[in-house]
Image (tube, rainbow over all chains, first blue to last red; front, side):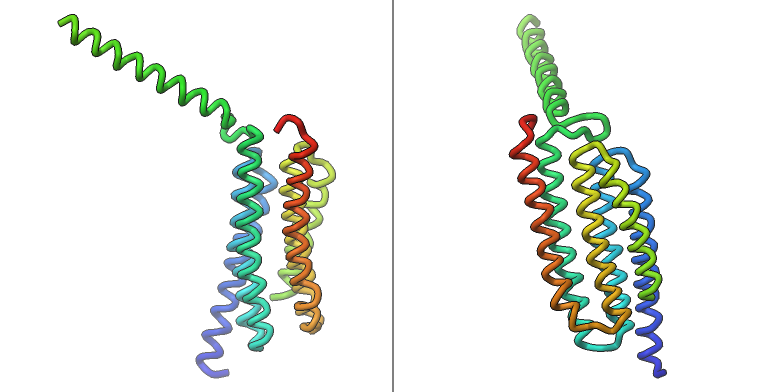
Amino acid sequence: MTLFNWILFIFSWLLFFAGFFVTFACFFGFVRFSDFFVRVHAIKISNIYGISFILLGVAINSRDIITFFQLFVICIFNILSTLAIIHSICRIALNANIEHAGISRRKYNELIAENERIEAEKQIQEKINQNKK
Amino acid sequence: MVIFSLVLFLFISIINLFYIIRSNEYFTRILSLYYFLMNIVVLLLFYFIYSNKFALIVNIIFPILIINMAIILLFIKNGIDKDDSF
C-alpha cells in the first residue's frame, strides 16, 4: 500500500468510528430522553452526522468510484430528507402544543403576554409617579 | 466495517419496532417509524454492499428513500386531518 492509500484507509476508519459512536449515542438519547423535542434532536443528529459519517467511511474504503458516487448521493439525499421531515414534524408538534421542558407553546405565549402586561403596567406606574413629582 | 454497521442498524431497528408498537403518543410513534424506516434503508444498503449487489443500490435504495419520506409526510397529514385537537 502506498502512503496515500494508508491515509485513505485511516481516514475511512476514523469516519466510521465517529459515525458509529454518534449513532449509538443518539440511539441511547432517543431511548432515554423523555422530552419529545430532545428526542427529535437525537434522531436528527443520528441521521445527519451518524449515518452520513458511516456512509462516507464505507464509500472511501470501497475504492470504487461508482460505489463512492452512489453512497455520496445517498448521503446527500439522506441529509436533505431528514431536514425536511424533522422540520415538518417539529412544526406540527409545536402547533399541537407538545410540551418542551414542561411548557407548551400556548402556555409560553401566555407567559410572554403576562410578562409584557406586567412590564407595561410598571412603565405606566413610573410615568404616573413622575407626573406626581 | 460493513458487518459492524449491519449489527448496529439491526439492533436499532428492532428496538425501534418495539417503540412503534408500545408507544402511546402519536408523535413519538411517527418519530420512531421514521427512525425505523431510515435504519432499515441503511441496513438494506449495507447488505447490498456486503453481498456485492451494487446494481440493486440504484434500483431499490433510491426509490425506498423517496417512499420513506412520502410515507412519513402522508402519516403526518392524515393524523392532522383526523385529529380534531389540532
